[in-house]
Amino acid sequence: MQRKHQVEFLLYLIDSFCYYNCGRKCDFNAQCQVILQVQSCLGVWVSRMAVDGVHMDGGCDWDGRWNHVKKFLERPGPFTHPDFEPSTESLQFLLETCKILVIGAGGLGCELLKDLALSGFRLIHVVDMDTIDVSNLNRQFLFRPKDVGRPKAEVAADFVNNRIPGCKVVPHFKKIQDFDESFYRQFHIIVCGLDSIIARRWMNGMLISLLSYEDGVLDPSSIIPLIDGGTEGFKGNARVILPGMTACIDCTLELYPPQINFPMCTIASMPRLPEHCIEYARILQWPKEKPFGETSLDGDNPEHIQWVFERSQERAAEFNITGVTYRLTQGVVKRIIPAVASTNAVIAARISL
Ligand SMILES: [Zn+2]
Image (cartoon, rainbow, N blue to C red; front, side, top):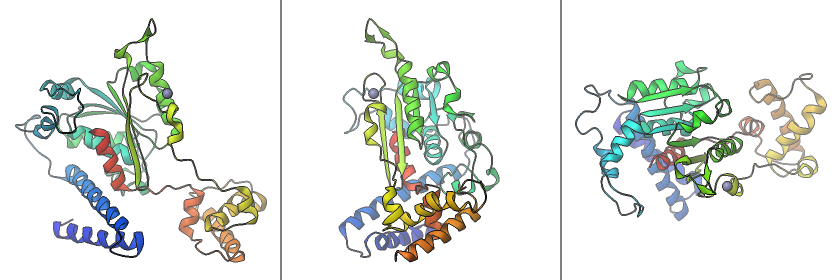
């Protein structure tokens, strides 16, 4: 994209977000939102320019290559932790010794791999059990249309290794549960960009099982810090967990947003929202009418979605409810949580920092 077009695009975003949020241009809340959006759009740009930019030639560690990282590591800042000791050795540790594991190579994972690799981490492993889908391409910027169907971990690792000289990303096209303690023990830090609480809890349990105690005293060398990030739409979080020392995932389960389910009585007898009508068609009408025989409802099958969509429309008409669309039907059936590239960029940057 040309720079001029980028600026126009940004201005367009400012306009559209204002109207989208409140319908007015001067609302304070909307303005805050816009600033956030613009900042995060810039974040995405920087990400894209960083990976799509011109490939640099020359030696692996050319002059000044790590100047940006040194600014963080070799001097304190106004917000650094009191225990932080500026040192020239930290960079060497990052470049030569530190082994980091990234779990998930999706929306957050792509951002994380890029951020970490450009910050000097070289020994990176990435675990992901998914393959690339067309719908990932808008935000999972390490993937291209030709990669659809290939394992995310492998494509992401190839991309980063080709793009960032000296970086060695090792991909694992597997589930986290396929590895045992000895695999996880080799890492200095584990970073999670997962979308499921179950996987987070498993990972958390694994790291806690790696702790060793001598006479009831925790051996600090057995602690592997877990940096956990998550995004949902425009919301996201990032936090550091020191297993055995700070509250872990299981201690703080109530912090995660509950999955939205609608009460059955509302769905069956008092629908008020378009979602209620869709849930009625999905939960009650589908198993009763068996429109495709014994086949269970498949969110990826357009004929199935079309059927649910039409039944939902009928139900909505009956109760004077508006707003049932094909897109919403698909969203409800597949439990799609909108994914926002800029949120991923912001959260990943936060985690990497
Ligand atoms: Zn705990």
